[in-house]
Amino acid sequence: MNLERVAALVRELLVEIGEDPDREGLRRTPERVARAYEFLTSGYRQKVADIINNAVFESHANNMIICRDIEVYSLCEHHMLPFFGKCHIGYIARKKVLGLSKLARIVDLYARRLQIQERLTAQIAREIMDNTKAEGVGVVMECRHLCMMMRGVEKQNSVMTTSSVLGSFHDDAPTRNEFMQLIHR
Image (spheres, rainbow, N blue to C red):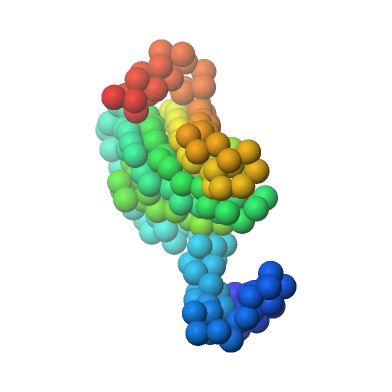
C-alpha cells in the first residue's frame, strides 16, 4: 500500500467535501488516515498459513470446541463504514485442533478487508474446516453496522446475525442445536 498516495487522495477528499486540509486540526489527517487504512485493510497483505504458523496440533478430542465473543471490527465494502460485533466459532475436531489464538487471528485476517458480513462469516468457517479437517464447523456473527446506524435508515438498535455451518454442523440438527445453545449461554 502506497501511504503517500493514499494520503494525497485523502487530502483531495478533504478539499472536495469543503474542508481546508491546511487548517491546524487537519494538517496531519491525511497521513493518519492512510496509516489507519493500512491497518484496517491489513488482511489483504496476510496469509492464513502465516497466521496459523504450524499451530495445528494432533488431538484425540472429538468433542465440540467453542470460542465465543471474539470481537470483530471490519469495514463494509458498500460504504467503507465500520461494522462491529462478536463472532462465535465452534468445531468438532477429528484429529487436529487449532491453537486457540489462531481462531481470533483468522477472524481478524478476514475482517481487515472490505467486507460484507455474510462473506466474512463463510470465509472464517471455510478456513477452520480446511485447516483442521474438522467433522464440522459453525460460525455465528452478530454485528452492528454504522452504514445502517449513522446514515440511511438510521436504526440504532439493529443487529445483523449471520451463520455458516459446514459438515456435521450443517447435516446434523442436534449438533447444530448444541452449538447454538452453547454460544448463547
